Amino acid sequence: MKQIKVIFILAVFYFVMPAAAQENQQEGADQMKIWMEYMTPGTMHQQMAKMAGEWKTTNKMWMDPEHGTICNRRQSGYRVTSGRKIFEDHPYRYFHGNAFRRIQH
Image (cartoon, rainbow, N blue to C red; front, side):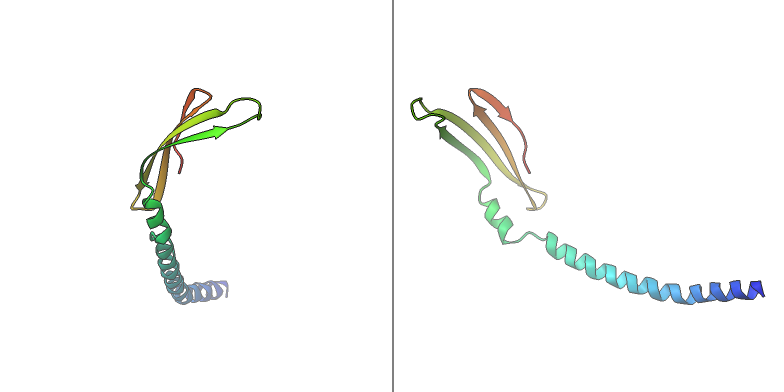
């Protein structure tokens, strides 16, 4: 009797599982399509790509009206990478006469 129950349960899984797996594959394909649409560069990426290149800026700050200004310089190199999906900033800053360099995404 136990063997019949085990065989019956295995038979149910044998016929039911492929149908469930096929349904999951279709759902996965739909989710992948949505993800690919999301990952496609859009108008915002095009606007950011216009900023690519080398930029130089100067900032002036006043800590106290009675004292002089503090001037800080910055150089940046903006690049668009990974198929126009990632916008990198390579700043080179001078703050209080010291140089700082880092990469921003």
